[in-house]
Image (cartoon, rainbow, N blue to C red; front, side, top):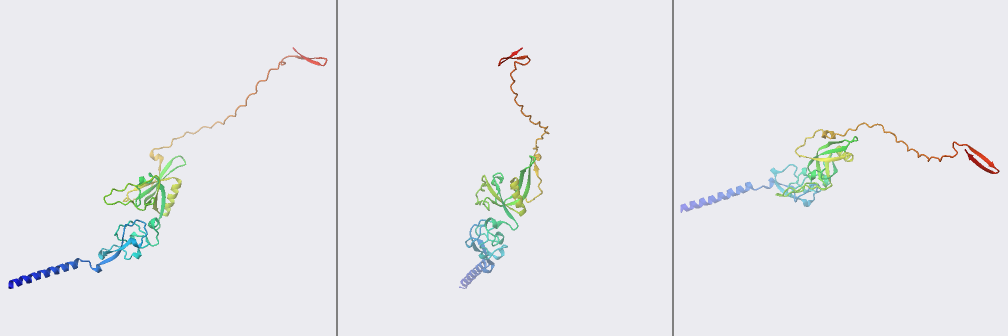
Length: 286
């Protein structure tokens, strides 16, 4: 009897210890109410330039220790602001990803303060076969014909950000496992560049005085250096030399046509005697 009582007490103690251990484990691993914070997140996928409305947003709980810099706690602080970078569903909305209030929407929202957006018309060659897309970096090369018949080319802008290709403010989306979309390029489209006011004036003048060409850059290559002009002779294409021209003779006036020869006078070189017979006059030629 004492043995059974001991076994029962041992079993009860074992169960109590297991239950206590489980309760302590749950309490230790369960998130406490004061350790999480509600922050604003995207309720759906949001494209760049979109002006946010309440339906685009939701509140998500994040551990306080995992809060990123620039998080936003109230949706009222986000509504009517434009998105500067594409946002995925459930992604946290941060201050660095939004334009200021009253900062516009679409293209105007992503223009940095002190910068300008200038649009140039391009074809498939100038636009690097459509591989120039929003977010890429390009150089702008200017070419023009010179008065002496030669041509020159020089790089007028370097490491410029492309804001838009046509009316697209972001690259075509690619689903996981999908091959990258082929670059889209029509016979004639536009490319919008992010430049300073001075650079915008240079682009405008270049399009009036000659032609421009875009050169695609590696985004990791940010080095810029002074560009020198390239002439046709640098390519081994020298202009043909022309010898001096001699004096040009003045055109001679056309000769007047000669009059036809007069018929020979039968009296020339002979003696003519006039004889009057009454009222009748006769001539005798000897």
